[in-house]
Structure formats: structure tokens, C-alpha cells
Length: 382
Image (cartoon, one colour):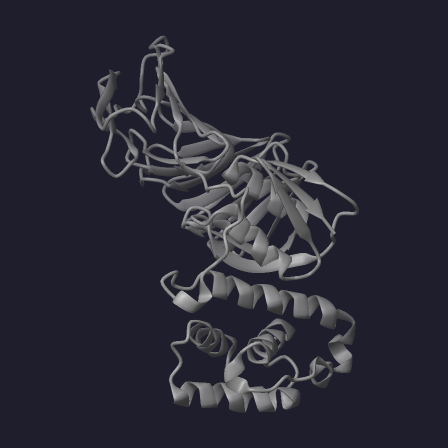
């Protein structure tokens, strides 16, 4: 049998119609041998994903019974696994080249377009600048730092090099960038650090880092690529915690309506400290979870953590309420529930550039949840 990576790669090619006859034959051989799969060689999700792909493609010319693939060790989760398989394969199909004439997605009457690059910059003197509508070029000059909106659609701070310290009574000018629901934005901070703000997020920072630390305050979800400076620690203050780094790549998700604050490390090292002085050191590929005052560390799915920054949604065993919170921020919608809330766990990937109907269509393929769109309100139904 193939490795997980080899199977996933071929299934993606198969979904896009790019498989060679030899590769299709290889998939057929694996498919016919799946019942003899040694325990643990392929996950249940991968087996069900292959099954769904072959059941629903006319190139194989036959329907295959799901019962053939239900082994005693995982019969009790077979239905959930098949739902996962449906969603995974559907997400691949939804992300196919839109120029394919025979697989065009259907639009709906009350569709909602995705978010875009937009934010509000509040300068130290209180002036507010709508970054999505202001012209490219220099916006302001504060503390010797020029603030510029670039043609690439990001805000850049540049100017004097920061001194090693400042006088105790020196006034520090602070700026704030806030993204609304349905918005996202990028900024290059005065020290060269790059920051990505997800929807409904904010960052407050000095127009020039003139003290012995680089300290910023955030809300919502923000991804950082921090410029290295061993003499000046970089500190991120968020919902009930502080993250300290010297130079690294990490993501902090701490929305007020999420149950936990999650810090995911991709590169370097960070120290996460809570309000009650509990701290953990993270290494790449780990994440900390601050929940109800307790701080824990576990292995992270880094692809999932930064999917938003890379332009797509990635759901990995995600409950529908968590998914709808993400959609409400990005599409600027109100979410309501009609009937009992589904306990299904959803898996899949889809571009954030798609209209909301296409994301909801992917979720509906599980048969465990349905949706109704009324203006900017989405109702979740069983």
C-alpha cells in the first residue's frame, strides 16, 4: 500500500483529472487491496477518501459497497469517517481550476462575497485613515518614521534607526491598525517585523521602537515574522498572555468569543506567559493553549494555524460552531442556529477567495448540516 503522502498526492491529481493511465491503474490496484490494508498503514480517513473518490467517478464504472471496508477496529466511527472522506474529496473538487467547463460551481441568489484588504489606521494624533480607500504613497510622518501605503497593499513604517534606549519622560507615539469583519491587512513595523492581521483584529504599537523592548498589543488573530534583534526582545501582549521572542515566526489567535488563546510556533522559539505568571517555552511545530487560566503545550498543525494568512480555510476535526465563527468574521455575517447544533467534526480546505455559498456547499456535502442565506445572515440547520 502507498504512504499517506503518496496517496494524497495521487488523489489530488485524480480529482483534477491530471492522472496518467498508469497512475489511475496504480490507484485501482491500491483500491482493490484496501481491504487487506495492514493496521495503521493507512488512516481510516485516507481509506474512506479513496472509497468516496472511486464510488463517485464514472471512470470506474461501478459502485462499491461501503460495508466491504468496515473492519471491527473502527466500525463504530465508520459513518463519521465517511463524512470526513466526503468533505475532503469535495474540498479538492471545489478548489479545482474554475475554467473547467463541466464542473462549474453553482451560484446562489443571496450570495456573499469574501473579505478583502481593508483596515483603519489610527495615528498618534487621533487621525483615522481608511487604508482601503487612501491613495498609495506617504500617509504620515511621526517620530522620524514615515508611514507609507505601498502598491502591494500593505502599510510600511520606515525611517530612523531605533536607539538603545529613551529618556523616561520621552513621549512615545502609538499607532493602531484595526481590521473590521470582512477585512484583513499587512503591515511592516518600524523594526522591519512583518505582521498579518486576520479579520476583526487589531495591533497597537509605537511609531518607533525607542525603548529596550519592542512591545505590541493585539486582539483577534495576528501572524508575526519578527525581525531578529538580540538586544531588544519582542513582546506580544494579547488576551491574558504575553509572548516573548527575539526573532521568529508565530501565530496568535485570541478572539474574545473563542474559548481559548492559541499560540502556534513555526520557527525559532517563544516564551508564553499568562497573567498569573505561568509560562511555557515553545519549539517549532508546537502550540500553547490558554484555556480557563490553564496553559498547556501540544503538537500543532501549522498548516491549519496559518491557513488564513495563506489565503484559505483549513478545517481539521473542527466543530460547526468554531467554523461559523471563522466565517462570520471573514464574510461579515450574522450566524444563527435553528434546531440542534451538529456535533460532526469537519475536515477540508477551500480558498478564502470564494463566495460563502461555495464554502457552505462543501460543508453540506456531509449531509450533517444545512444552511439558509438571508441577506447577510446565515442560518445553520440540521
